Length: 252
Image (cartoon, rainbow, N blue to C red; front, side, top):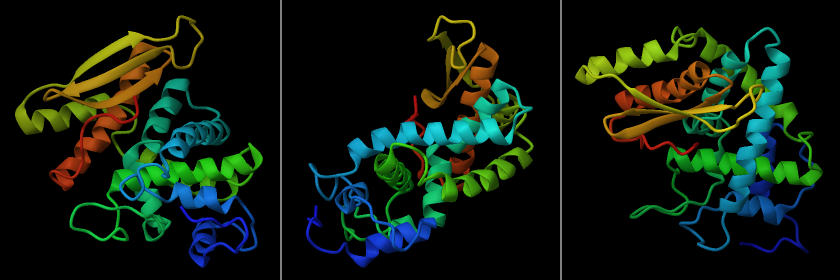
């Protein structure tokens, strides 16, 4: 990782922030941003993994705050299902691609240049790491809300227009039966004993010996809907791009 303590940051890092919609004269911890854009395949020690862990929590906070404000009439279950799609690797990778993040991510795969376009999962992880960098500047969402919330609004509208949105379990069942006439199986358990806890139950949806999605909710039914939302998106993606998406759930 480069040392920017006494010199100006590379123009690429500034351009990266500008692509997000942040001011051109914004000063942040440039070393940290450089770290957020470095995959472990490039540097096994100095990479974005620790920042991505924090960024995942920051993303969920931002999405939850946005949904609470934007959809005050929706039930907790509806918000949970919508949130599950917004924080999924698939959605994050699409957002990272639209922001041009791949141009700034250092990532290496066999027989490819370290500067080649990264796989979707790496783009999703890097975006979470960048969120962590911005959060650590103020320990608030101050540098995140102005550019992320418009994207969340656009994505939420698109998701709600999907005819599967209100009942992902039924939509998922249609997809699985069309492939091999089998049904997905749900493994649901209580993870928080409080009746009022919004994530009291956790549900995993399994099909063809793979876990395709994990969801949470205040009831078993709502947790299963949230899990089905993730699985539905992943299965659709696999049908569009066979062999591209690993069905293993990375967001338990």
